[in-house]
Length: 479
Image 1 (cartoon, helix red, strand yellow):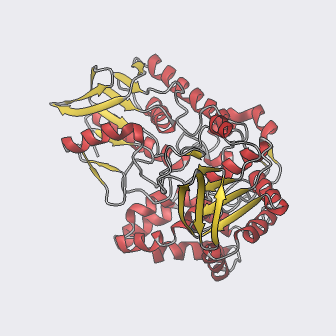
Image 2 (cartoon, helix red, strand yellow):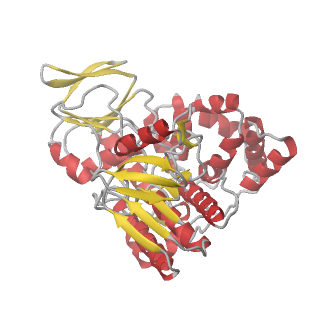
Image 3 (cartoon, helix red, strand yellow):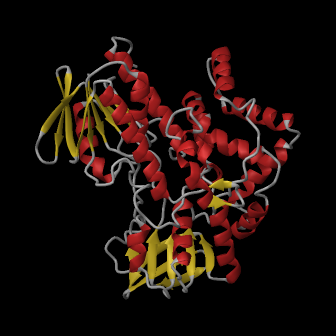
């Protein structure tokens, strides 16, 4: 069995780790990756130490269902990066990249010991087509490689330039790596950061850490900031679980949004918490003053209530499975709350929340909602929003890419797969294989939830892909 893995980021690491644990087969594995930063992908390459992993260790394991795998690797490295408010180590993303690299190299060693031939090709795959029982992959250097199975592990998209500012002086189109891009921002300049999600938080705290003295403004249509992680407590969900969702599916043949709401209600009622008050607080996310909400949530890091903790955890552990079972009208209903949902499911860590709060309190940082237009006029960057017009020296694009977006580097490959009929575009975004020998792991997988893939979600999909590939190699089912 010959397996081609296109891309060498977190999704590829999860797939290799699962293959090393599940297969007794033999064959060849070829990993294609043009970047020099193997196994780290775009998010976890070398960068500033202020660019932190945005989640506690328990949900950052790339080994499916082994929640202590990352924490065990972290070991004695952890205390040096403790977020005292969270009570958990939050390391620079570059250090997390070392964990991914270690996991990948360990998996490769295991596979080689088992008799697999493994190699890494440092070239981009630009074409792929079915050729009888095999796939033919063409790299940018013109070489052709054959494989039985192809796994696309190409990562997520990059920020979209919504205002057409590409090439303008003072405009940073893609902030990462911040170690490089922030060198282009003068320390006393008036900076606008487009977006108000986790990428925008990274930009703001990194500017502050570099000694930026000029004003910083978050420009956003909604003005909604991410929620704040709370200190973990000893609570395991009893109702909002994949097992309970599976039971509902078996009993009724479908799972509705009302079913999921019922599970959350039961979870909170069992804990003695007010479900109605919690949902009212959630729905107010889009209308509350963002700075007031940030202050309140920073003060509530140690709050004993489980409601937000349960929702944040299960959005990633149960959400992807439940999403596949929901009828389309319920999916549309959820998507109407996109900004609130992503704010809850992708919260900022307390150390960054505290840094943001200090900047708000000092007056150096502000939020401007209702942005209508950003343009280059008379050599300056002019912003029009609900409260008027402002001029900035620099604009950093920190808009999070939409879920299931096609990465720039994978455009030719995706086009070839669509032309060959090996895959289709999902109506909501992403790629859906039509050939059981093609596997999509990571954020590009079509049909997933509208919340960008978490490490836990990537690990789960990687494990399923590994099981499918191994079953096919053993003569079992291929779907």
